[in-house]
Amino acid sequence: MKVMNRVSIVVLAILVIATSCGQGNESVDRSGLTVGDDDASIFSRASQQYFRGSLSSSRENFNSLIYRFPDSPLNHDAQLAVRKIDFELSGNPDLSVPVDQNHVELTPFPEVALVSSPAVSASIIQLETLLISAGASPVIVEDYGAPDVTLVLYPEGYLLQANIVSDSLSSWLSSHSSVPVQPGGDIISTVAPHHQGVVIVIGTDAVVDTSF
Image (tube, rainbow, N blue to C red; front, side):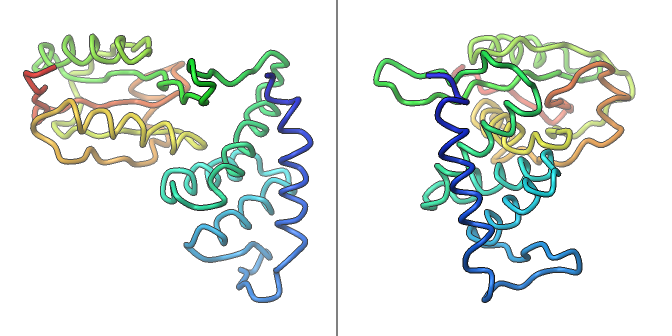
C-alpha cells in the first residue's frame, strides 16, 4: 500500500486532534510550542511544528518519540506522521513502506558514510561488509584528520536513523557498549561532501567482534 493512501487521512486527523485538544494543562514556551520530555509532550510539540511548516523539526521530534518511547501508544501514530513528512519533503508519489512476509513494516537500514584514518582500514573493511549485509551501500571516506573516537553524526531530521546505526555498531563492536550519537552540523559537509545521510566516524578504539 502506498504511504499517502493511508497517511494523508489518518495522520492529518491525528495531528488535528493532538493540536486542538488537551492543550489547557500543558506548558508552552515563548513561541507557544509545548514543552516537556514525555511522549505526549513530544508528540504535541512535533504536531505543532508540522502545522507551522517546520517539517524537518517536526520529523526529528516524531523520530525522537519513536526511538525513546517504543512502547508508547503514540509510537505508531508518530511513525505514520514521519512517513507523511518524508513524502512531503521528497514529493515522491511512489514512496512506499517495505513489509516482510507477515506484512510487518520494516525499517530500512540507513545509508551511511564511513569516515576514518588509514590506521583503521582493517576495521573499515569488516564494517563495510556488515553494513552491506544489513542492506546499506556505505560510502568510504579516508580522512587523515579523523578523530580517534568512534561516534555517529547525523544531519537534522536523521536522529532515528542515527540511533539505528548506533545500535548496530554497538552490537558489532566488541569495544563499545554504546556508540555516541550527536548532531553533525557542518562537520558532515566537511568530512563527507555531498553525503546527505548518517556519518559513522570510526576511531582507533573500534574493534569489530570476531564472531561476525
